[in-house]
Length: 273
Ligand SMILES: [Zn+2]
Image (cartoon, rainbow, N blue to C red; front, side, top):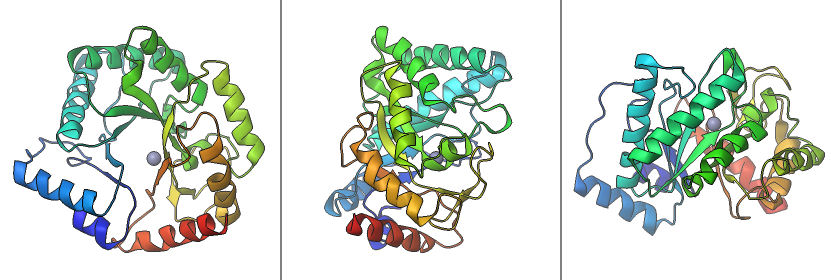
């Protein structure tokens, strides 16, 4: 991964630290971690981000599904720390009752963070709201984090903003006024910047479709002009932490080089802006 990221001239990377489809993860060896860190540091690639497997459901009421989510999340935080990664990204999961689901997410995160205090920051990713997914509203994610902040866990938490998911959930990220509206929505919950990372995917489905299908940058409904707005406005928004906020591609890949085209378009936009 590190060699590939270096060869593709990535500026940041996101990985799964294990198979995203589950199963028992392989242990890392000291030497492979050192080798990876060396390549990433030499190439100035940061942050390193770990994505938690999609199949965990933090919003579940109880039983085996909840136990499994707690176990996987705790282990992924430990593995993220072992890799020296900055952020660990997780989806909230799904529940037929959004409010109850989010309350379950908060209680599960509390348990996980009571058991293990991560060095990396755990980021809740906004969802498209597909198939009962909870956490499509930024204010809902901020509310979960605020509850835990009051209990002293806030320093470990933040939000990862996926522009494809936001678009599918009904936020028209192509327009500057939508970013202002997201700011207003968040200000109703907190004055503190919570967004630490962007996922820069285009969307195969239209605004508000509630369908989570990523497209190559410029080939979906967000489009090149939409990404122009995103790159100009998002890093300057008060709720994003730092103008040098990193963006991650999760666009479809056939071969690793497919990222080059997406990165090329984004760099062209950045250069022009
Ligand atoms: Zn994403």
